[in-house]
Length: 182
Image (tube, rainbow, N blue to C red):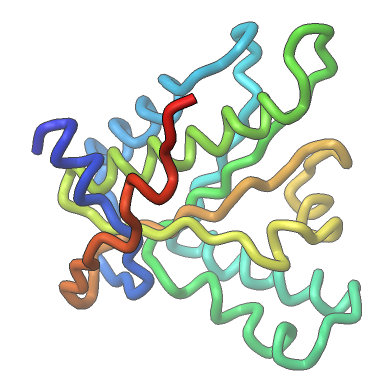
């Protein structure tokens, strides 16, 4: 798959199953994450690879966090199920570092670019994925359970695996609606 085809055909696939990335595919995914724009060379990222028994551990973190933060019954009851939606999840974190020339937003954007690059690398290798956030990306209890600092930001959970159904999506937007000449 060439680069233009990748950029113009990539999509999010919410229904994923086994197999997930093999070791060679995962190495490419990791390398793609580290090639993103990184003002100041700060490398303001941290990634957690969650698979096998780690999915149950993450589900328990979600569950305990939802209880501790007094979430609604639906959030609590779904907590453990969420981590079973794909064979692999990569948690992407922006590790903010105070810097006179690199503001917080650039560091968070760099981590976001890493998520996109990882999803692109997966898609280019015949895998599927979806980038999710939601309550558990904002939960202080989840951040604490992962050993993150208060200023760190979970920018996303990248679910990776094999698409369950072929759901090629049509183009949703027209470029002319979003681009203008100044």
